[in-house]
Image (cartoon, rainbow, N blue to C red; front, side, top):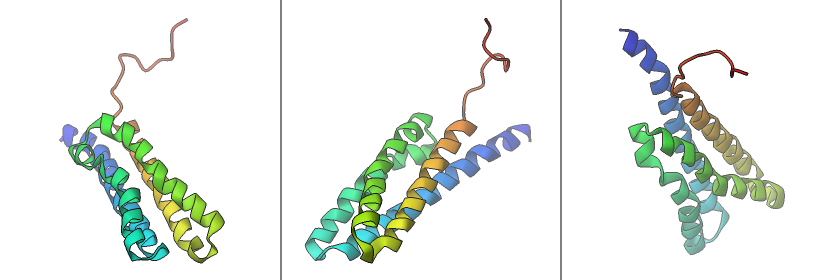
Length: 128
């Protein structure tokens, strides 16, 4: 029973990270498909979504190292959203949604890393 109680925060953080990943992929893919004409939009969507899907296997397995480097995979979508929010007034709302979703995904990844942090021997501060 105690092991299950200790496992709940890890599972919650993992599910939150996967849910926010899905939201980011959907918003980025949708925005890219709406923003450019057909052949270019598919390529843009693939270029923006592929980095987000690279760590998927490790995220599903709960690998801490994957969660750590997955934070870097958010950068292309985040930069795309910032650029579109500033330069393209027609997709400013979608860009804002991508920004919020990518920040939420980043926070969820960091939350998982904090919840699954290995325990050290003493909880006291560093010794002098």
